[in-house]
Length: 379
Image (cartoon, rainbow, N blue to C red):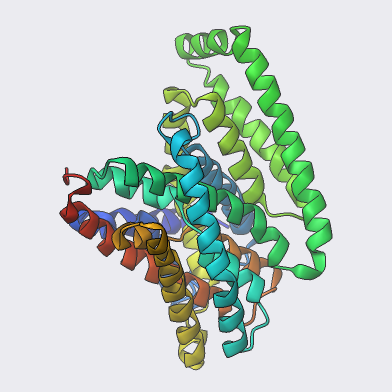
């Protein structure tokens, strides 16, 4: 990798904000970054080599940071979430029950043998996508809070489940690795809580702010990389390490200064680099060569939307059911893992991303419909 390549990646990443600049479309920034990577990578002009070790390593850092930030978006400390958790869990379980036969049916229809993976994808929700959309539309009220709880529960459950189902033969080893990461994260949480109760965190924050040391960012990045190293050595995805640490920070309370610093390094460089790398890794030509892969992606996307709309059985308005179907982190993680480890068939990672795009399009429409029905006033 060279500085010329980094400059090209940085320029390509600008496609994300450009595509998302039309506020009324409510498109995620990552969509433009993925498309830019597709045009410049394996599918397009091949100006970017996703197999470059330095590019891949930087993308892994971006992946860990993206999942870290996604974890901090889960509103664990929000007092409104706690009363809504019970109903949110019921909805998530109902969706999970419906996702199981849907995943099995799609795997059978397309002969891929990835029934468990498809079920997890169909059941997943993206807090990192749904929460900003809800905020931008000004949606509010008890049904919205319950939807947030449902999305948070589904996001956590599916991120934990993904490493176990993407390679069933290695599930026991992945489970042991997941436990190791969870234990290490719990230890860090205990240390943070003890430090907070003794006033050490406040002192650290003040010293860092007054002296410009960025101590919180340095410490959290160090812990993130340690957890990522543990995840790699225990054969689980760094996705789990990043998300688990994000949940810990969300539970303790993320300082605004740390949030701004994380936003800067993640959204300013490492996050866009990861999504450009992912787009460059996908060979969309395989979709054109095998139309069944296009059907697979569309089937996964619409199955996710339909299964999430099953919550209508427990009184959830259809727009909110469809809103919760938004996918991002889990299918992106599955595609990235599949691209790196060759666990998925040719073109299958691209089909997973296509399915996620179907849910994003549906969620955009559902959010606007929810706003028109009086769940909030667009800002």
